[in-house]
Each structure stands twice: as C-alpha cells, then as structure tokens.
Length: 123
Image 1 (cartoon, one colour):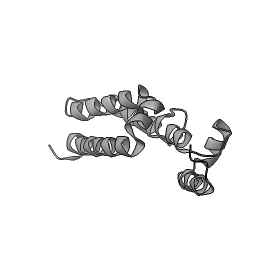
Image 2: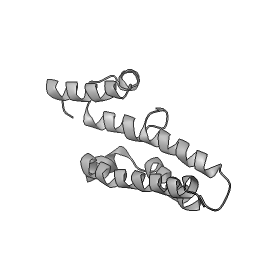
Image 3: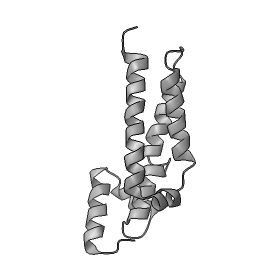
C-alpha cells in the first residue's frame, strides 16, 4: 500500500473527483491506497458509480430491450458484466492495475460501438 502523504493525497483526490470519498471512508477505515480504491471504483456492486455497478446496469438495460438487432451489444455487455462480477481485486493487482485498465477500456469502447450500431443507426 502507498502510505506516503503524496499517495494519500493522490488517491483522496481521485475519490473526491468521483464523489466517492465518503463511501470509501465508510467502507474502509484506513487511508486510501491502491488496493481499496481500485476495489471500490472497479468491483463493488454496492457503489453506484463503480465500474461493476455501471456495467451491471447496462447489461440489465440492454437485456430488457427486444429485437435481434441488439444481440451483439447484449452479448458483449453480459460478457463485461460477468468479467467484473467474477474478477477479484487480487487478480487485477497481480496483472497490474494499469495493464488491466488498458485492456478493459477498449472493451468498453467496443460495447459503445456495438450499442451505437445496434440501436442508433438507421436500419
């Protein structure tokens, strides 16, 4: 864990920028560090702004839409939701947080493109 003052202020600033500092202090009684901040912002389904909570909402919303056009987007959303649901923070940190994020971000962009193609382009 990064226990330096610099690390504390960096993680605190990130949490405050994402309106998650209060949630962090309620769940984790220690100073912000990479492990808990990453877990909170990526994997906690009970935190409405976490990546997992957002992906869960996208998956549920797309699954509720009818029609075969949306199947590619629905499939990708379900895959990303499952990936977050069944990934632990240790797996992410073992791979490297930066590397993991750099692999996940293009998948989110791919999902955005699939949603655009499935639902927003004229048929």
